Amino acid sequence: MKNESTKRKRVVGEAPAVPVSSRIPRYEMIPPVAIRALANRFEYGYEIRGGEAWNAGSVDQTVLVNVEWLRTRLAHGIDHALRMMEVLNTATSEGKQALIINASTYQKLSEMQEDAAALMFAGALMVCAADAFKKDSLGDVE
Image (cartoon, rainbow, N blue to C red; front, side, top):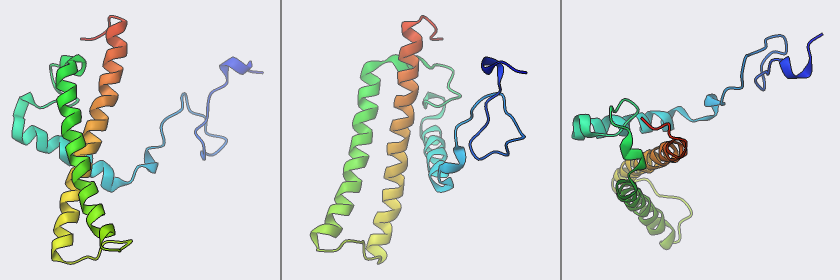
């Protein structure tokens, strides 16, 4: 009989007879449209900045502990959030609870998707920065 500390963990919703070695995140809970938008944002950054763009494949990850650079990226993310608020505020200021879709609004929604992807990028960046700061405090940053 296995002792409690050696039992393997199972993923929620998985068949009880199929053990796994560790818990994995529930990636299926992330809407594919959001994953695609974030991937497109990373690709866009690479297209306009080339090798200078920060992403998981960047050779130099030290920007993740550069406070000034992080502040500028967060300010950029805030700008994108404010643009989305303007679109929503316009709709609600006219007494609507939902956006009326016409050619102008459709364009704004397309821009809103791009703004949302930029905001997700800022979030992903800060998750990686927090991780880098923790590693840096332990002396593990490359």
